[in-house]
Length: 509
Ligand code: AMP
Image 1: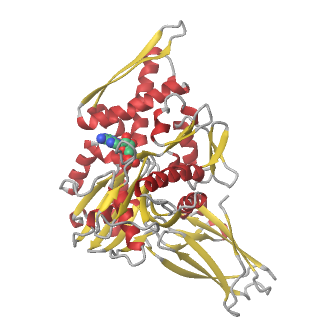
Image 2 (image 1 turned 30 degrees about the vertical axis):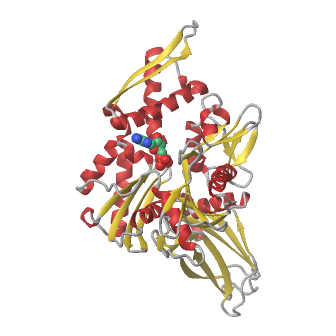
Image 3 (image 1 turned 180 degrees about the horizontal axis):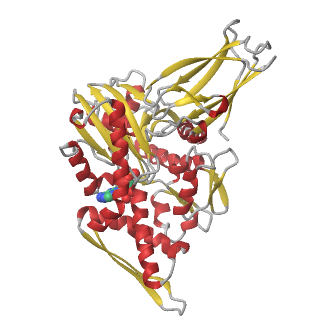
């Protein structure tokens, strides 16, 4: 086996529920990094126990039921989010830990009396993956390709990079999860195919249409919902059993954190069971007491049909997004050569059945739904290394339009949705106020015509504008989106050619 050098770039799939790492070798082979008992998956969970010990991964998951308020899971749904976001509110409704506005116009979560920025929690999980990988590989891993949902905004991508910085892990490149999966599928096969990746993981849904021509991977269109995943399937079941219990016993269990944790655990296990069987009992002994002190059990008859009925709206939502992405790419079902399934939730038979019906053929079995993303990230990492024998070309797109705010709050689109990246565009601007020396530009990401419905990426202040009469200064603002989907901006005076002074980026708020 080839000896790897310490500057090796590993691949990390930083998932909502589970994370996974892999490393690629010069011959194109890939190894997943095993964790203790040979498991390749590290739960993306961080906790602090009552003695103040930090627990990450399996250790954190093991004590989850007993310590639900100090066990942080699915925090990826909150990364790079503004505090007023509706998403934050709805996450708070389904988790036992506290979520609140942070000091950097972001979201913070509480654990054992301490507030953490969400990207700090991601950093803890990344550090664990890095350490496990270092132990396994025999050198300190310091560089990685990290994957994110294709539907992540610039802000969310920046937050993942920040997480790497906090622990001295160089995030060499951020790539999209479906694109990584397509690489895992396509490399070494000399393909000429158009594939559709349907990626339904623990917390997010992505769909991408990708053309593979040997070692070139060109994304034609992408879409998704970073609020649609396995957790929502669990939540649909949880709502059902809570209602059922309330009807039978008149007791609302949703305010009892320990009961809720037991229900959550069993909901996920039952859901997974129902992918293999058609019936599963949902029973939890002694879940609570009557006001008279009598113990009560939870007993619900669950079968696959009921699960399908409860979760059909979620599958419908994913198919609606899929349809829109196909329209964006200008393709119909028969133009898709292979449908690839990624993410644990795609193991649900009804998800596969619906896709089979939609495309008139069953999805490909060509990739492992849990491992493909880390494998693709590792292969891409390899290709980024100096003197790599494996050269891959990746042509990706931005998932949502990026633009600036015009007077009145309208969105002036600079890059439309699905614009290829890397990309650069220049926009002309002028001074509107007499003798103004600063130009402030507010940048948004989203597909709505009004900026108030899109995500504020930041406010850029360009100083050093030449004072003049209104309209006399001609400025050019250059927008650049790199291959990672991350935006940078600069501006210059068109008459003098002078570059405006430092670009200050104020985080959204
Ligand atoms: P991922 O983030 O890709 O690991 O996806 C994890 C999600 O897939 C979780 O919500 C799991 O509950 C779900 N999942 C894993 N295995 C199965 C299965 N056999 N059937 C249904 N859902 C599953």
